[in-house]
Length: 170
Image 1 (cartoon, rainbow, N blue to C red):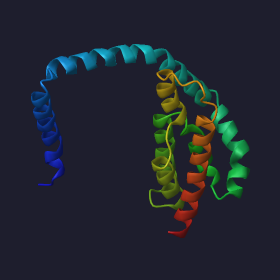
Image 2: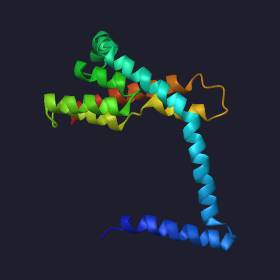
Image 3: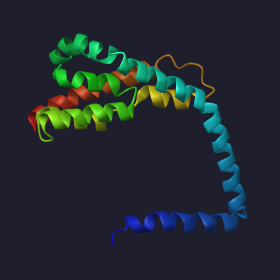
C-alpha cells in the first residue's frame, strides 16, 4: 500500500483538528463555500457557453483544418510536422477537441511513432488557454490583460517546438 492512499484522509483529519482548535464551524463554512460555488457557476456560465460555441463553429466550419493547411509550411520550418498543426491550433481552445485529434493521430500513425510522441508531449506541455482565460478573467477585477493571452500562446508554441525537437532526438 502506498503513502498516497493516506494523504486525503490525513488532510481531512488535519482540517478537522484545525477547525476544532480555532473553533470554526466546519460544516457551516463548507456550506457557505458551496453556496459561493453555485453563484460562481452561474456567473461563469455565459462565458463558457460563448467559448464552447465559438470552438464548435471553428471546428465544424472547417476553418480549423483550413488554418492548419495554411500554417503547415511555417510549422514545418520550425520542426513541427504538418500532421500536428491542427492539434496545435485546437489545443489552446478545447481540451476535448484536442484529445480527439490526438487520438486520431495515434490511430493513424501508431502510438510509438514520432508524430504520436510529439502529440503526447504537446498535449502535456500546453493548456486550453482561451478556456482558462475565460474562466479566470471573467471573475477577476484586473483590467490590464493585454499581454496574458499572447504570452501564453507564445509559450505554447515555444514548448511545442522544443517538444518536437526533443522527440526527434529521443
